[in-house]
Every structure is written in structure tokens, then in C-alpha cells.
Image (cartoon, rainbow, N blue to C red):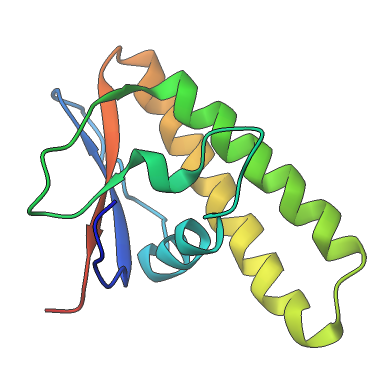
Length: 123
């Protein structure tokens, strides 16, 4: 991922769908979750699926993204169990948005199309 201000994150697909892949996703919270996931060593990071508009994206099978998102959800749930009160609201929002992303990737997987995450700033 290039040095780019990630303020919103969207799912993009390489085929036609009969639904909006971003429906119900808080794209700002999704971007925060992606930026926060930059230190994964034992699994792919959300950042590995994320590309700025000026980059040539790589396409991924939805099941790969689902596995990564599920891992991040589990990590955030474990962190939430021992989190400082000031961090709990952020973690709860992060878990919620990642659950929605997981559901959307699951729906994409049934359509046999590939995806990547498109990073956008506010401009």
C-alpha cells in the first residue's frame, strides 16, 4: 500500500453483482480498522488487500479476505475483553464493521468474483 491518507475503505469487485457490496459498511470505521491492522505477522493484513486509486490493484478470492477479516475480528474481541474503557467503543465499532464486511465478502464469494479494498481520502 502506498503512502496515502486512508479515510474511507470500499470493497471493489471484478464482476457484476445484484447487490451493493458496500451496503451497511461504515467506510470510515473500515478504513480505521485497516490502518490499525498493519502489524499482523502470522496472517495477511487487511492492508495487503488495500490499494489507493493510483495503484494497480490485485484481485483476491473472497474466501481469502473472509479468513483475514475473521482473524481480525477474533483479535479485536480478545483485545476488547481486557481493553481500557476509553478504547472499548472503538473496538466495538471495529468488530461491528468487520462483521458487516465479512458478511459482504461471504455474499461476494457466492457470486464467484474477486475483490480488493479501495482506499479513498476525503477529496
